[in-house]
Image 1 (tube, rainbow, N blue to C red):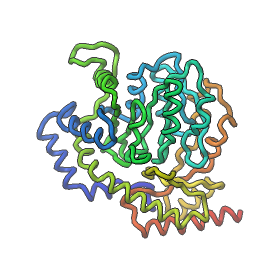
Image 2: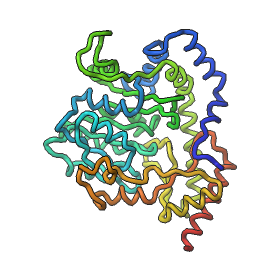
Image 3: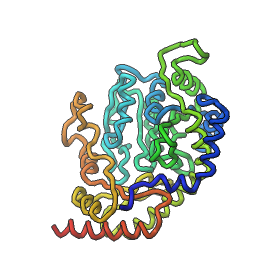
Image 4: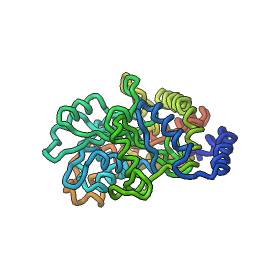
Length: 369
């Protein structure tokens, strides 16, 4: 079976460095809020073009605490996309706010910026654009709307570390950029991890307080916070990996080009918008007979994934929002048609050739049915 992702190959290539970094943490004896975390925060902030980075337990916490730091709370509305992972709306709900959905652009799978203004009400407080699958959302248009209506912006960059628009990294456009280091991400830890970046010092200070039980000084608490810190072991591993990230992104881009050259005449393939860097966290096709194609690919020894089969407005958890089928037709169509192929930097051309042959055969069979 050709896997959707194989993390063991990356570890094999970095084993000596990663093992040494882990051993250094064990020998130091500091496991929380130590030199590795502080150094990684500085290095990551530089990489994404922000003044401050605050290491956290997860990308979900980066979204949640980012909203809290901005003062978003009960009675507020936050506009976002219905076609993403539930962590985005989970974070909105955790601060007591209400998610308001806007349909996606069918080509990019990202929020359709042209529809945002119509969804703004007197209660709208913030926007959460998602850079889905590694393709940047239309941040220039989104930031223009945010400035016009004085809205906060939290960028969901969980799948898009290293992506940029005109050379400006995602995460540096909004008030807060939220990143995930879940092991499967382009920059993944060996456990949970996340980070929030900002160039506003007052937000960075509040984020640091919120992640440490709501206090800036130990045992002195100004508000109810949470326990959300990037531990030293994960920070040390991420410090080893970060210098390799651009090389891995380049390898993903080359793999994406090989897929697209071979498959563009068969299925709808992902593309990068002009002037942007798509980091291809996922290589996601659109196929009409998605479930049938996926089953045939599995039989052919190719693992695939569907991100995401049910849009958020149709999830049971959001039944109370009152959306029904047909509310966001582009998101619903994407949920029926998307299929992600194996994609990781160590994927070799021979494996890709096998995937391509299997996709061509599976789609041809589907078209003939």
